[in-house]
Length: 268
Image (cartoon, rainbow, N blue to C red):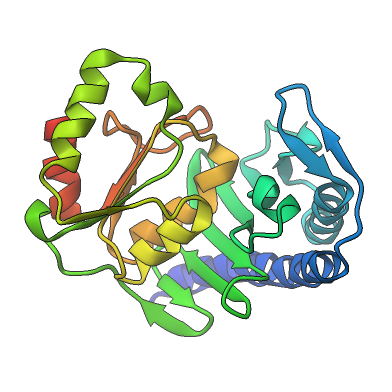
């Protein structure tokens, strides 16, 4: 390793360390609120719920990261965008799955990602109340890890052997041709499930399922999950095969072989 590459790796690691610290702060706040089950809920303009916990967690993450990197940009689910002209943009969804959080289902997570010049370079996905608490993280070029154990996707290459999970699909159902193509894909896989939110991506990155389709997401939902899947050996793009960016609204994630097969069938 050259000195130049060593410095670059060290710089990348400090960003991940900061994100992991922020995720631990978030985990404690969320788990405590979930256990106490006493928090205020409001309905946003888009008819989705937000709790005082969402707002407090996002502020805590922002305060921690901005103290370490005051010149970085920040795009949060609740507080919006700040300093978006920076080369470094932190992408935060404090509780991805607020509906589940409110209804006492432990299928929600805290998502923290860092984008550098338009490319996501790290991601931390923390599920404080699922399976006793679960955190997966990834750093570009260094792999993906469940806590400290390196993880990887399955070796499934054929649709007939694939476990398929779908998330939000409302928009997909509104296009007759695209919905029919989706039906063709479902007809070729081994089994279908609907794990949803962070869980299906954790399952993909750890080899427990093999293919995911979603048509209604935003970048904050999946930024951290995208690098986790890719660093675990998978491939995650929009449904048309384009790379993940700030405007993404659809997702196709799978083992590389299955991704190519699904992309051809979906013709999105």
